[in-house]
Length: 378
Image (cartoon, rainbow, N blue to C red; front, top):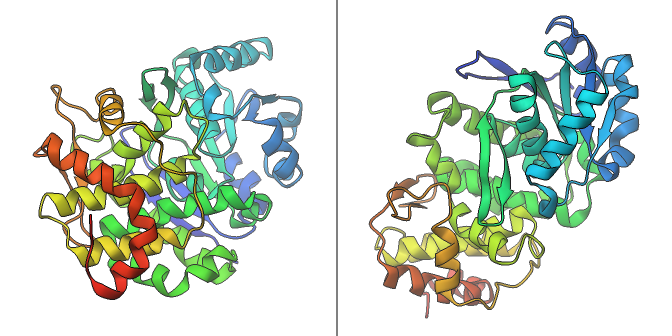
């Protein structure tokens, strides 16, 4: 199929996101257009490279095959120590300021490799080859890079734009089922915050997406990229509009943090977080019961997720205060007044927040009844 090209504006200049099944076959000449590089270095994990390395090798300059630097892409390894490890590997391999880093993997690989590219020798060229649904629709676009601290997620990082992004939906064929289903949460997020037609499409075609139907992927992935590209092009450094992309993430990051990044895949935490955010909107009188029930019903169709933790709401709230979106000691949440719209709010009482969080673990079991009756109990 012909690639769909989506342009993203950044302070460092415009870059292209190329989307399409088999798009990696066009990668080598596209990379060559970026100019000459003294060396090319692939940053990836053993698991990812074992799954997609054969498909990626023909897409990158030939000398890169001897410069494949592997690291553990578990969320628990997304830290400063891994950044140091990779920077030392690059040094030993002779990488210089004219080198190119190609990040091949999911969200952790992209975030870590992006931060390495931003930091090594104060910045070297970067190309993303995202291999998970989360990375293809979200994390590879927009230039956010970073790593976690014990105190919270993504607290150390940089805004650093890639030179190119290749989104080849064929790479999703090797993705484990749980990883793929986790990524659907980010797709739902775009419908909730910016595109009611996308949300309605998911309501009608969720089973197609779960089967990795090509027509569904060919519509949904570029559409999500377009939505994110529009937002980040207007607000690269999250000074306002870009905050809407964090719908469900304040809750989700807290879930990941209090469970020490071992219970949830990122999309699973975001899925729970979107339910909590919808309920918070309801508690604040912003989100209707019907929209809460539609959101919960759609999220329920992703499939079983790890349970909500038994932590008291106050423990989760304490974790939220370490979130990078907190300002002047005030928690900020993205709420949705109706499906397809979202905005940030600081006007959140602790009572409303706790009520929403206590109800959240009960909602998935209620969602079908809620959708039939339009009533939410709790």
